[in-house]
Image (tube, rainbow, N blue to C red; front, side, top):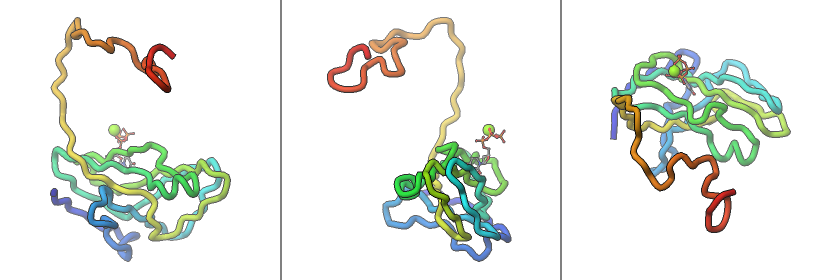
Amino acid sequence: MVTVALKRLPHGADLPLPAYETAGAAGLDLRAAIETPLTLGPGERVLVPTGLAMQLPEGFEGQVRPRSGLAVKHGVTVLNAPGTVDSDYRGEVKVPLINHGREPFPIRHGDRIAQLVIAPVTHAVLVETAALDETARGTGGFGSTGIAGGGGKP
Ligand SMILES: O=c1ccn([C@H]2C[C@H](O)[C@@H](COP(=O)(O)OP(=O)(O)OP(=O)(O)O)O2)c(=O)[nH]1
Ligand SMILES: [Mg+2]
């Protein structure tokens, strides 16, 4: 459990605070804070304001993730998923949405458009070296183990 200070901005003052919709939900649903409804046409993208600014504790990040229902039913997802909210960011949290579907997608004030997962992050200390240790995988990647069945080269 972690405490996050949250500020509701004037254009989102009438919206409920983000909430975990069920007891075990990982994400807090984020709502659109928009003065006028908008329509996201097929292939279009838009940066949707949430009316929220926050102060994440050091050592934590906010991950802006899509809602699967919007993706499956409408083809609408977070363009940069997972979006990253830094702990030192004090601006408004916004959600870049894209419509991959075939139909226009209406967004109204208060619609739950994405979810925010608060997660711990570690800062790495980088140590440059000329040689890395050897592993069974080595430099194989990007499908080196095959797609189906027992692996091997694609
Ligand atoms: O989905 C997102 C992603 C980012 N942000 C905000 C919070 C984050 O701390 C800041 C910067 O995000 P990021 O580092 O992903 O963007 P950048 O393109 O690297 O911008 P910057 O140069 O400001 O870091 O923008 C959002 O509100 N929503
Ligand atoms: Mg950045």
